Amino acid sequence: MTELEKEQLLEETMINYGDDLVRLSFQYVKDKELAKDMVQNTFVKCYKNLEQFRNEASIKTWLYRIAINECKDHLRSWHNRKVQAKNFLENTLTIFSAESKVMEAEEQNEIKDCIFSLPKKYREVIFLYYYKSFTLEEIAIITEVNLNTVKTRLTRAKQRLKVIMKEENIYG
Image (cartoon, rainbow, N blue to C red; front, side):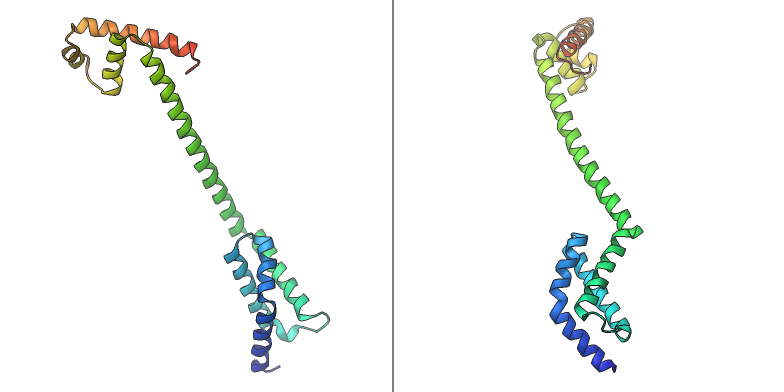
């Protein structure tokens, strides 16, 4: 078989079976672009081994077998397993990350609700100290109360908050 005859036969088989082979390959690899790559590899192998084709079966059957083997080889390959594991981990971490952000936000809302249930004098000390990062001295100036009073309010606010959070089952 001459090179020209091989090229003409290959072109004819590509036209006749290309789309069917892409659909077949897609059933295995579940990715359109990867399926096209598998078919391209199939036609390369077909071209290289055309002289060994014995006409015991139709060329269509032979191409299907080559395509299926290509797909199976790809699915068994170390590269594919590595990519699948990486994608699985990325998806899992993304889901976990999104879930943990939602849970963290929910927990923060629950804590805020607990803080808002405190009397105003305790609520403002907690807010200024933990959320605005003021020192005790600065809080005394802002609230216009004695430094020791601020310390006492903060201690009592934390004690009450601990009880409320335990009742609400926040932080065990």
